[in-house]
Figure 1 (cartoon, rainbow, N blue to C red):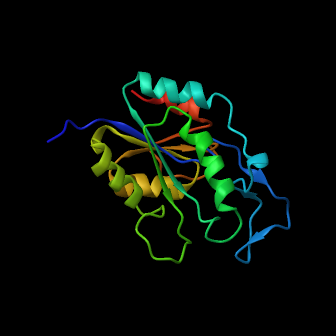
Figure 2 (spheres, rainbow, N blue to C red):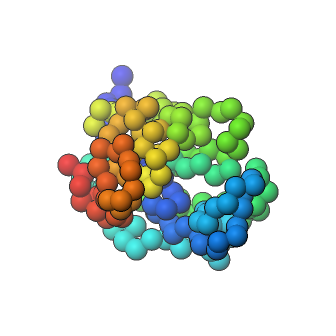
Length: 180
């Protein structure tokens, strides 16, 4: 059996890159939503210190595994070629693996967060020691996926937002510094 390695599972939108402010009247699937993932390369902006934070996580001995829900391709909001160009930017970061769920919320898959499918697939393929691993995300669905997979959770949010995460921080650099 391979040696298990600790890992940090990392959400994409809102953690590694900025969300896009669509304004007050924007709706997706009939629901009002102000902030979304970027739909084009022009909208894609990495957050400050992402590269440095990922390097610090690596220095602490963790694999860095991206786990991201990306339903906008299937929903027709992102051109598949442009999506791959955006993902190339993330693949150029110091990440060990990238897992993407392209399913819509009602597709019934087991990989879409808050379900733990992506994390469990990564566990099996990357030989992850879940007891010494973390999930970093900006939404409670990230926290729920991490908890369901058996890892400790760190949520990027302010102290006013309710969360069941083990820890709360404001950005990925704070999360990287928090890791043992």
